[in-house]
Length: 333
Image 1 (cartoon, rainbow, N blue to C red):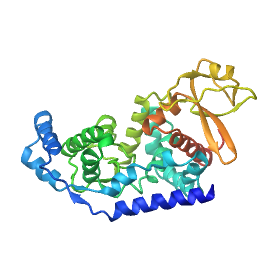
Image 2: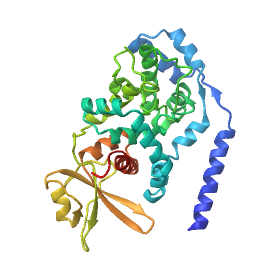
Image 3: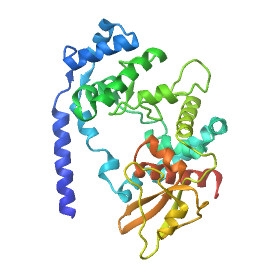
Image 4: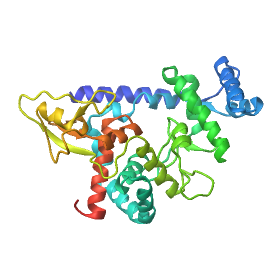
């Protein structure tokens, strides 16, 4: 097994090195698909064709972005490998310091959205190390690369590229300077352009939504996103569980839907620590540990976090980090 892991890591490193050695190329604005995109934005968004062509001509298609898209940590690591990335002393302590530094704004935001401060801080901690690492790629390059040179998800990223250009125009963002992730996610909360436009909140009431440097805007935007995806104020999020011998539990499917209830899971032999009412919608998560499977049960608030990133590993990391932060800042529940 160790030999296979080393071989896999070597192959992955070689593939990434090959992608990095392939030079970035300027986007060809005379390609039929690019021309069609320009025509669409002229018709639907009232953009000037000449200006848009010049802007897209400044974008570069980068093979390294495509390589990164094909190996996200959520799909290549088990839970016991993934968890230590986000649950370590440095990230916890920096989260505590961040919470204390922004306590007042976090409390005001929580009062407006109903989302607990520890959850907002934990999402920022997992996403960008509390706003410290917001991405090194130009958003224009990332979205252009994926919109026109990544066929698997080209329609999605063309919509996001369109939304980014609309956002840049509406919010006064320089599209040639804005930096983000390899997927085009932006700011401290790593919102995609469509989410930025839909869920971005101007908490400071200055006429702009700034998700890079305006913390009230950031806090309210994260909280509003979760609220719109079903967050229940003071509701349960995630519990540990055990499966009785002979039990036949039904783990959540890839859509991570709340297709079970506490009662139906208990009928399948699942014992839930501190279980809420039996009719509470729930999902069962199998978390791979080094020595077996650890079972956990998520509720509506856990489901809301999976709408932020459709991965149970991500949502569990947010929940565990939030619990660690709350323990240090507020003491035991």
